[in-house]
Image (cartoon, rainbow, N blue to C red):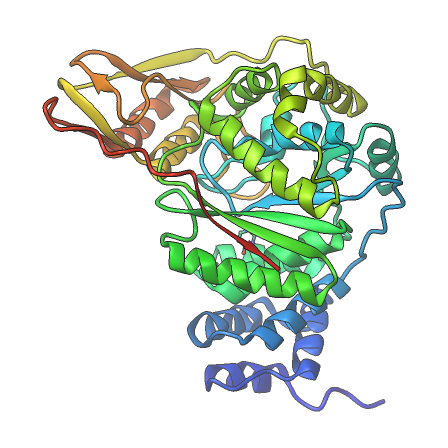
Length: 431
Ligand code: URA
């Protein structure tokens, strides 16, 4: 029997010294890591070498292909176009909850398979699990059946989809190797492509609450992901959006579901409506349905009907009351002035510390935990006026959450004019 022509140490050394990895090296190292032949410490060393030395576009495409090939790639036999959306992770980002039923109502099918939230950005599955009875784990047959009947599925990605990424992402999370454009792009795209959609819209977040702090970095990540989509026959569009302040007025689990239902019923915050419609238009373009007006569909209330069917199909009761917190703490302004800053990262960390998110994989989250904002950036405020409510079942969590939240609040003198609101959509990149 012949073994590989190189060892794991050869591959690590090659990248450490700034060389390109060959296709054979990439295929072998990803497969061997998935099978447990490459040790965690070896993969950690290779990931760090990639963070420091980078990978070019051909290496990144091959790395992604190897991660897709580490598991199954779903085939979705649905008689309408399939289009998915992925967000690189924001605070208060409940757009998927509105977008999936909206796009299904417009005539395309949305197979949205997600992981759980880690850290300060919330997880879509954690939010939906605050709905009594709703279940995230579906078999492939159930996913396909629901897509055909309802047109939208939001469910847990099965263990068979890109298992190499599942292992590698957990390792990167604890070894300081998340922040690498080739590793982030290949991680996201391997999971999305393996889930089988024909096309994909990426919401690439920019700003304090996001992985990408500048528009330039976000553009580079977006271009890398577009290249990977192209290489795999998945038409991809990237929308760069502002994530300096939270989206909408809530960050957490049940609070975000309630706000999404408001939008589906024709109300809700203007920024959520604006971003949902901007992403919906891009998804409908890719799905070959440019003539459908998502604003009219949202206003008609039909997307809310689809939401109810989507929730019921997964055992949930869309009419049931959502969980409420045992403890609510009001945060007030400490002076008169104009609220000029509300940092997304600070609000995300506050919600996380209140129990809405987890610090380690497998931890449970509190469905009722989160932050409800009572003032928006640009509004005048007076000393003692409530700015937000902190929701939790564990009051001991309040001081740490309050400290995080307070760090993110900026109140300027009343005479100074508030910062002009910047546009939510910063750029659109199409392949
Ligand atoms: N989300 C992912 O799925 N992977 C990353 O590497 C970063 C964000």
